[in-house]
Length: 343
Ligand code: ADP
Ligand code: MG
Image (cartoon, rainbow, N blue to C red; front, side, top):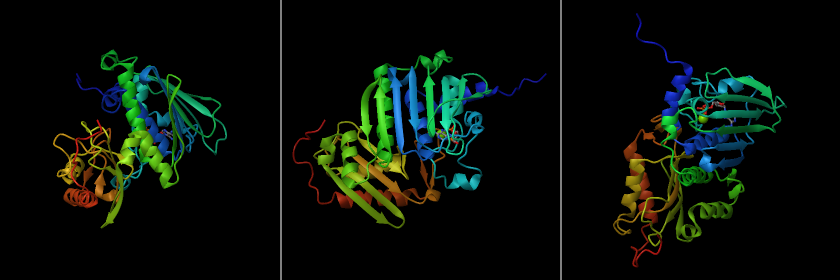
């Protein structure tokens, strides 16, 4: 008698969903990343009840063809990489082909899309069942709308871990902020329970970019920020770092991007801390919006399913570059000589 059996696709997806889909904010992150990968320049996000009840993202990207719609919902199906070489230097935010399959295994998902070639919209729906997706005609302009309702409706154990609507919405807000600072050239709107939270137009000029940073990080950050742009040996670091007069009691205003991907990384945090060491009071945290650009081949983004972490091929080189660049930029700045005025 065989004791070992293959998991059903549904159960396999639900297990994978445990890694990728932790809460409504993770759905928003995955769906927005797909829109950016599709070349969208406009992201319209509507969420209800902290995203628990409904998340809808509409983009104006390349769209998904009729025949690709069921595939988009299948696990390990992606249009972004085809072989190992692609993975070694992946330029898109997604590549695992898991997000939509995972989401549709734990929620009610409707994927509506229209490509330039088809000239007609199509919709595929999946409701936490095995992957026999039906595709029906639907009106839609070029681009894609993903609607996710009733997250974890079929996985009560997961649903129990959801927090209040307010908390879940705050997480979504954080994801949207991170995304909107990753791509100034993309317009972003966010509504919660039909109330407008953001309406950010694509920012072309430096002044418009700074306006967006001020909107996301608050005007006080921008007033106290130093703009930097440093390039050396194939590495570029640019963005805004707050002067010591604007420090935080928590590490809550720290945005760091590696090749456009928002990440949290120990090595990065350490390098930044060190650069601020002599000019910040003990227990205070620096605020920054920083972009590191380097050859995609020297950084591995396939470390964790949520892709929040990266691995640098030469960690010491990156650490050194970050520390020196920031240290140099902050060199003329005197230590905070008054009690910090910010929170
Ligand atoms: P991945 O992003 O890793 O490829 P996903 O499950 O997130 O996996 O998406 C599967 C596929 O569906 C993508 O590779 C892409 O071809 C397609 N897709 C998903 N969302 C969009 C979108 N908004 N616009 C165009 N294509 C999309
Ligand atoms: Mg994806």
